[in-house]
Image 1 (cartoon, rainbow, N blue to C red):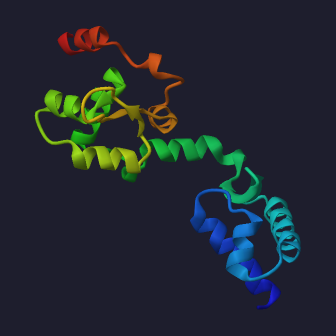
Image 2 (image 1 turned 135 degrees about the vertical axis):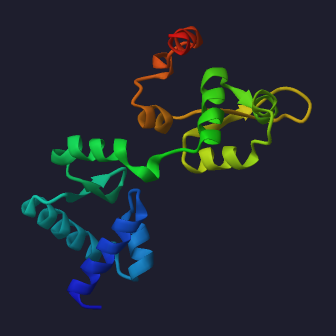
Image 3 (image 1 turned 60 degrees about the vertical axis):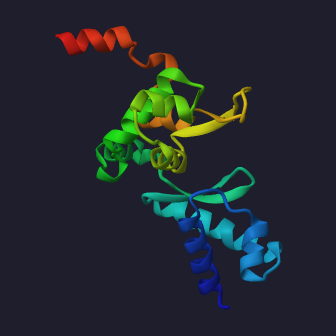
Length: 176
């Protein structure tokens, strides 16, 4: 494999990963020693930095990750807030609200409040990392407990869960 091909392969892996990729992972993919891969990645990091484009390669969490240039954060945030693909269905929003206001909560309680099966919606919310499994409830069958995640806070632009409007505030807005 030629040098440029190695760089392109590393770039492709970093682009699709979405999380830090270690030298060990790159080594297993490329069948090259880490000592040969590290200088390539270091050169790529320098190239991305020097061209001052929209993407950078950063060393993060003992690995390397392709990230957006922090300079463009305000515009990326604006895009993410208007992105069509980021929208949730009404069922997902209802379920998420139930979880957010009642966490930790089990699936049966969610279904009792909504009046419909919540399997698919819970799976979607788990896949999107808006909710997480927080443990098991100490009752017969030990059902899973669900709660919101850091991604939930990020999605809705909240510092913490206490920034959610209270049910009293929501009822006042509805009445107005």
